[in-house]
Length: 258
Ligand SMILES: NC(=O)c1ccc[n+]([C@@H]2O[C@H](COP(=O)([O-])OP(=O)(O)OC[C@H]3O[C@@H](n4cnc5c(N)ncnc54)[C@H](O)[C@@H]3O)[C@@H](O)[C@H]2O)c1
Figure: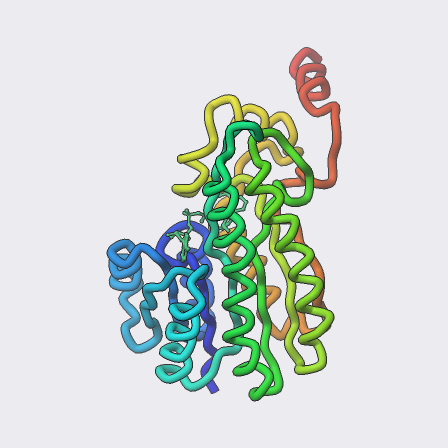
């Protein structure tokens, strides 16, 4: 039996790298994104027409989500893994964030995974098994400036992960989260200024951004049989950002001087 993954936000970045990782292991992959042209190019670039399906939909639109999940199920006959990766970021001082920006970030980053999971979980329940991974962020683990909407949406998604794990375990469905540290994707290029990049280096023991494929490995692991007893967990893939506090710039300066 060939396994099937549905990945949102799969047109580029971490989502596209994750699609490649599943395909490399022999899975079939339904790739959902709101950017139809970029998605079509990504799917064409993978050059696996029998094993891929492009789904153009907005994860915050309930009717579009239901229709996309129906199409994926009709094409592949099952869904073994759901990766709720689609997300958007607005980085702005808290007092400047508009209500519209706040609501859009919450709709995509939090309501999207809620709707996708409601649409996919009944299919997994009927199969008796499934794995869901929600892509959160280190910005939901530790508060930082400029991320009032983004960080709050990701912290809420981490809790949604635990809520989903608590209820869906009965059906053999595991639900986990991966919290990426900074990764140099289109999103990061749009919101990470030179100062933000320097700040990250000052707080990351491994002293670099993560790679898309490093995130994809962690996501794939949590969807695989190797993670069969892991549910309700949030895994930071962040070069040590979450684990560490103050002191790194001083340590590095002292080492440079010895
Ligand atoms: N890059 C980072 O530094 C970083 C850090 C922490 C968390 N993340 C998270 O990782 C995930 C992937 O981000 P990325 O860095 O690859 O960004 P990206 O912008 O390259 O990719 C995100 C994809 O999601 C799609 N998308 C956005 N809104 C959508 C919607 N409403 N419906 C369907 N698709 C939609 C976009 O079109 C895009 O293809 C996001 O959830 C993001 O918050 C990224």
